[in-house]
Length: 223
Image 1 (cartoon, rainbow, N blue to C red):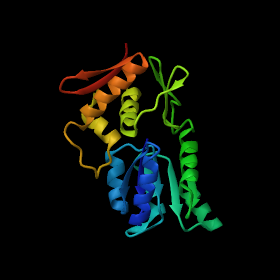
Image 2 (tube, rainbow, N blue to C red):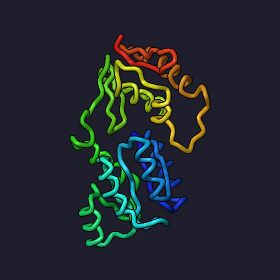
Image 3 (tube, one colour):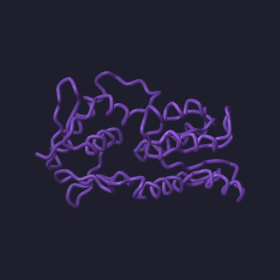
């Protein structure tokens, strides 16, 4: 799962990104609306977390602009402006949810998952291939009736491959799924994740294989 966080308090943004990463959720962060618009044009996000009081404007103004660009990404407003009529204003302008600061990370996670359970947000509740069953909302991987524990970045690789099962996935697409735009990516990072993931899947009898498509990327298919 990959989120865009639009928040101009650096300490809060860092803490929130760190907390979400423990749940295998990747976060791109920006403090400016102008940069947020560019990021949404260049990337696909599962949801957007949006503050209202930003250095270059009112966060709610970002919502209709995003919708006019044809993006229906779910948006949760995170703000200290939490009076009843302020919540009404946010929901009326197009926010999918509205959460007042301060908040518990657990509540935010529950709200994100609730949004992604909606059919319009997540057409496919689970990803299945071979004996693998991946729940992208709760970030779990099952093989038969047994849960397979996978480190966060490997899980993100597996999800990206499973979403396009039977089709080649570009290396650049895997990097986008696993790393945020501010991270420096080592040249062999994806290869290392794939190598470890192959070993885990084979040892667990997952019934799938990850194949290298030379010059293109990788492909996940049932064996």
